Length: 278
Ligand code: C2E
Ligand code: CA
Ligand code: CA
Ligand code: CA
Image (cartoon, rainbow, N blue to C red; front, side, top):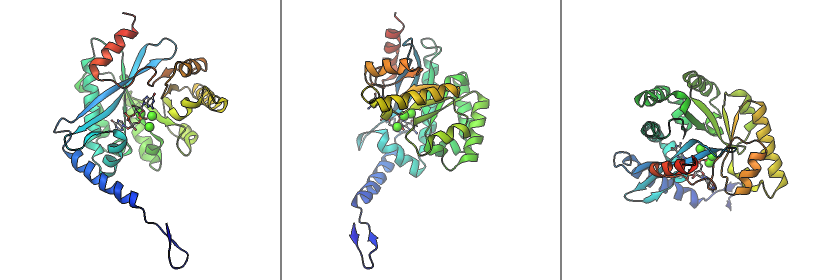
C-alpha cells in the first residue's frame, strides 16, 4: 500500500493479478476437461453417528489436467463460478453422481447422494429439469438426492432461491446447508429457507474436544437443529474423541477423515462392506 497525493490510499496488489493470471490459465484448461475425460468424482462416506452405518456419500469433484497436473476444487471451482463454466461442470457432476448411484443399485440400494451446487447452477432456469432428468435416467427416487448449498448461494437472491428450493422440495429432493456457521448471518437463513440438513463446519468440530467454548457452540447448533426438525452432519471429524463427543450431544451424522477420506467408487464398496459387518 502506498500513500498517494492527498492522503488517499492506493493499492498495489500483485497477488490479485497473479490470481487473475492463474484463473485465466485454469479456465482455459478446464474448458476441455469434460471432453478430455480429465474429471472424476470421489465419494466421502457420511455415517450414522450411533450405528456407524453408511447412509450417504458426498460427491467431490477431482481434476487431473493434461497441462496443469492435479488441480484441487478449491482452486478451480471459484474460477468456473466466475466464468460460468460451473453450469456445464455442475451438470456433469449431477449426471455422473446419479449414474454412479444407479450403478450401485444392487450393492447399496438405500444409499443417498449429496452433491455441491453453486449459486449460478441453482439459479439457472434449466437446473430443475436437469435434476429431474438425471434422476429419471437412472430410475432414482428423488429422496436419495441431496443438494448442498452454502450461505453464499442464499445471499442476495432470496426470491429466486426460495422458488428454486420450493420446486426441489416438491420434487422430493433434500437441501442441506453446507459449512454452517461460517457465513455472515447463518441463523437468519434458517427461518427464510426450507432446509433439511445442517452441515456443521469443520472449523467448529476441530476445536470441540479441547475447547469448552467450541464444544458448547457445536452442542448449541445441534440442539437448535433438533428443535427445528433438521438433520445434523458434522464435517471434518478427524478423531475418535470428536466422533464420540458428537454422538453424545446428538449429532446424527459424521463425515471426516476419521471415518474415511473421499474415495473412488470401487473403494466405497469395500468401505460399505467393512461397515455392514460382512
Ligand atoms: P466442501 O463442500 O466443504 O467439502 C468438504 C471438503 O473437506 C472436501 O475438500 C473434503 O475432501 C474435505 N474434508 C473432508 N473431511 C475432512 C477432514 O476430516 N479434514 C479435512 N481437513 N478436510 C476434510 P475438497 O474435496 O478439496 O473440496 C473442496 C471444496 O470444493 C468443497 O468444500 C466444495 O465447496 C467444492 N467442491 C468440490 N466438489 C464440488 C462440486 O462438484 N461442485 C461444486 N460446486 N463445488 C465442489
Ligand atoms: Ca459440501
Ligand atoms: Ca462443507
Ligand atoms: Ca467448504
